[in-house]
Length: 213
Image (cartoon, rainbow, N blue to C red):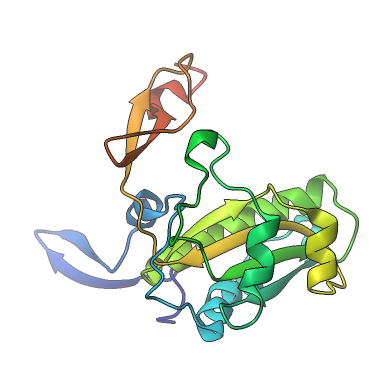
């Protein structure tokens, strides 16, 4: 149970005629706040295959459209092909002038998300759920991630002789970026930007996400 971020332990005590519930461990809000996209990683920390397996394990507990469960995962570490992935991906599309990742901060562990069937709406829904859940699990473990959709599809498939179609990659490591969320109006630009070493990410305010005010 300790390995599942969704499960939380509660300590209930009766006082003043009411049940008081004490939450122990990370809340979902905590994990979401820390689950930011990092485009730079600490080279001194090598993510192990065992850590990647722990992250992927959450996918065996996730909901799936029509319960089809067609997603499969190929694990890549520093010692098992990270050098083959790096030339095939692009990061930081909104900051092309920086040529991210900066030299010496490249990610060296990846989870390649594949589908055993042709991509469809249901597959894409499952993919989104899986990526977010794995990102949250990584944060719970003290790691950081980046979801990567810009890559050379055919060369990646060939490089690892993938039996299924690659859809997305999840880079995993100890992030080095300083990231701050910036509340923004719903009609304002939403591209992330960097200023004085801080990576800023505009987010529409919660009150503006609700249609029926």
